[in-house]
Amino acid sequence: MTTIRYWAGARAAAGTSSEQTSAATLAEALLLARSVRDDRFSKVLEVCSFVVDGDPVGARDHAEVRLAEGGLVDVLPPFAGG
Image (cartoon, rainbow, N blue to C red; front, side, top):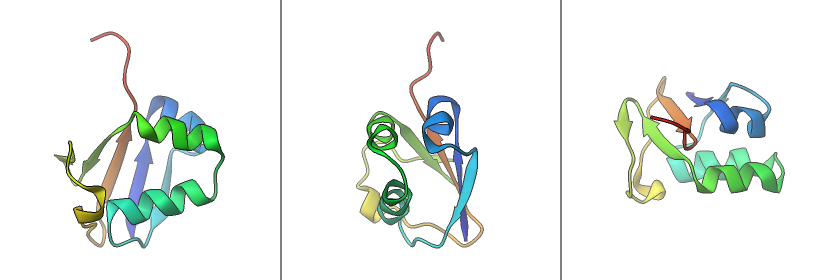
């Protein structure tokens, strides 16, 4: 299992701070997460950045980002300030 950890607005839209997934790729994990939530959650994900096991995903194809057993995905919405 991989842990998905939601931050700030992503946490509010997900209705949880974290969840477990058995997905093999980031794309699959996000599809599964979207399938149990409303459109608001999907819209938030569209503007989020993702960090998998400490490595920013950036513009990489989410279907190519493999998830490791015991791994961690951070879902980061845009933050104000800086």
